[in-house]
Image 1 (spheres, rainbow, N blue to C red):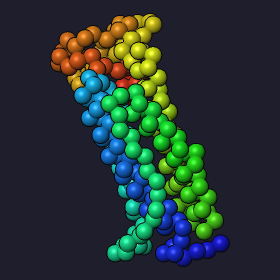
Image 2 (cartoon, one colour; image 1 turned 135 degrees about the vertical axis):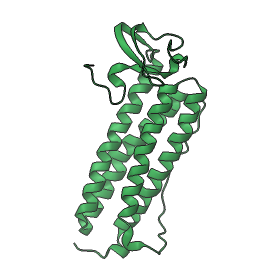
Image 3 (tube, one colour; image 1 turned 45 degrees about the vertical axis):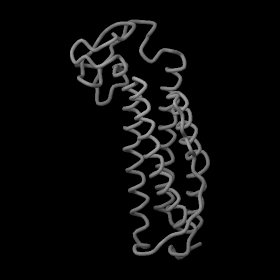
Image 4 (cartoon, rainbow, N blue to C red; image 1 turned 90 degrees about the vertical axis):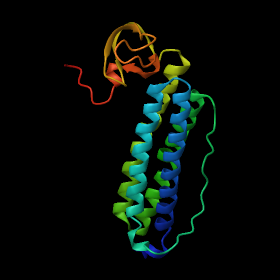
Amino acid sequence: MSVNFQTSRTKDNLMRAFAGESMARNRYTFAASQARKSGLGVIERVFTFTADQERQHASVFYKLLKDMAGRTITADGSYPVDISDSVVQLLRYAQHNEFEEHDDVYRHFEETAREEGFQHVASTFHMIGSIEKTHGSRFGYYADLLEQNRLFVSDVEIDWMCLACGFIYSGTEVPDVCPVCSHDRGFFVRLELAPYTCRRY
């Protein structure tokens, strides 16, 4: 079925996706601030890292609306209110929302785009949906570590990296403060989880 883009449901879904990604970026920025206040610099980085990716998703969806430039799209939607002083709860909220995007929202948007003949848009929904699943898994993993009191503790000696300065510490538990830059223990992360890190150095 070939549908005019300007009257399509796909156009509306793109606007919903743009709005959803834009709001997710802000929610994660707010959550990052709460993590920082809670002394969890590493969780702050997880939220800001993901927020930057959500901004990119919003940009991708927005560019697909180029044919609607100069017009206003009215599209209803429902969006979560994820407010909590608990960093674990914020991670769980984020995990739930990301999985919902993958399992339900973007899957249906993809199906609609294919039905209406917008194969590139459908493929975009599919690929970004897969990314959201990765986001959900990441949030869930860090929530698990926090709930199990294992974010800064390991059963065996491992390497940890200070995300502030890059110092690598070996042990079963991170130090209270980084001996190099004096940032608190909340900035340490398992070296295997540190960004852009090669295990051989």
